[in-house]
Image (cartoon, rainbow, N blue to C red):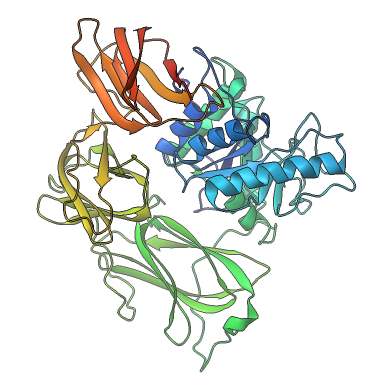
Amino acid sequence: MATYRLSNTTNQYNFAGRPPTLDRVAFTIDHIHAGDHDLCSTYEVVKFLVDRNIPVTVFIQATNPSNDHEYDRNNARMIYRLAPHLVTLGVHPKPSGHSAQEQNRVHTIIRNIIKDVTGSFPVVLSYHGAGAGPEPGITFSGIKYARGILNSWAAGTDDPKNTPVMVMNSVSRAFAYTSQRNAAGYSSTIFVHTNELTENSTKKLVFDTFVREVMSRRIQAVSYYNAMLVDFNRTVTPTPPSPPTPTPPTPTPPTPPPSSGVLGSLRLSASSKVGRRPVNANFLIEKSNGQEAGRANNVKTQAFRIPVGQYKVTAKIGNITETANINLTASKGIHHIFLMPAAGSTPTPTPPTPAPTPTPQSPTGPASTTLGSLRLSASTKVGRRPVNANFLIEGINNNVVEIASNLKSKAFRIPIGQYRVTAKIGNITETATINLTASRGLHHIFLMSPTGSSTPAPTPPSTPSLSTPPANSTGLGSLRLSASTQQGRRPVSVDLFIDKPNGDAIRSVRGVTTQLFKIPAGQYRVSARVNGKVFMENINLSANRGLHHIFLIPN
């Protein structure tokens, strides 16, 4: 199976509809496509995006009724488990022209699949078919926002049940569309099928250009649902943000009682005062009586849904603190951007707040600015199931560099050097020491023992990131091995082995249903072992064509 690679793009997005806020774009994909040797699967495209911390929404179909749609459920599960905090699953119903009864039947099937996979019913949908959109007499239960397939729009006329999509016939037109939408207070939505992302196609060039511009922080990627929450909770008249004006003190600013249940949308972000670059900060939201209403640590931006009313909001980086007073209403969302002075300048005085996470420092000293790519993940020791954990990265002098809480996996861009990394679940803690270089990304997976185990599992050594080959390797090929039942095609946990023809062991992994390897091109013997049985195959891996081999295990 081919792995996804960006096109050579040169266009830069140099617009800002509402400076200093970066213009917003949402990535959406219809269908889950299998791909082939020359065309990437939806799985590989989504993996490429989430590996770069880009949220994406995938709208799934119900295509195979065999075994209660187990095939569709497994596909959705594989996509969602790549990064549950970045992947949103939505409904892709029957094409337009079907009866309300048939649409409702299929919609219910897809809703239940998504509930099984994610734990929640879907709230977003994309229409199916040429010119598709809302139809008289047909509704979809639970859906709050529906993405259409047309790109015509006018300020103040957007329909939450038929939102427009980006022009994809040229990069310049896509840039202009995105800039105009953001200037009017809306986001811009990319819509593709992954089987359209063929080499040298215009759609792939547009798609890849926006991916690269997000990676270069000239535009921000948001999930489709979060984009819609902002789009439909704000006025559409473009008003450039201005520095916050402190609200004169009052004895008791009006705050709705908790029982009112009326919520507003608030997003807090931090950018450098010079250059307007997003920076990590600790955010605090307080009511007029000093009671905490929300908090987020060591993030560039965070969205909150809190009761409407007046609040004091604070951003802190090291010894630099900025505050503002806001009045949050239900009809208009607020995005407040703190412009943070450089460290060492005079901060705005504020009442003491809880100690924040220390500002990340390079373990090799302040002069080191070269960044490396590190991903931390946590899985159960038995079964290799992803689990939520708290991650900590510390420099060799014990300074805190990065923190991430309650996540299965997290990617970091931090200065190269030596670090101690830690994962913690309850009273179980695993640590490891790594050496991060600029030429070789690392993906460290902590194998966590069950909570309460007296002997935590040793953490395996760090391995190169699947998307970043070792610096000293040449002619690498991409090989994915998977195992499914012969009947029903259900994923099966197996032990996988890759050997040279002479029997020399190359790679092995235990207790997985699928695994991607980056290994030198050549001939190999691959095998899967389960329940004492071994299934073997000879393969020829090339550097310019990925390979996906699926072992079919008898039921």
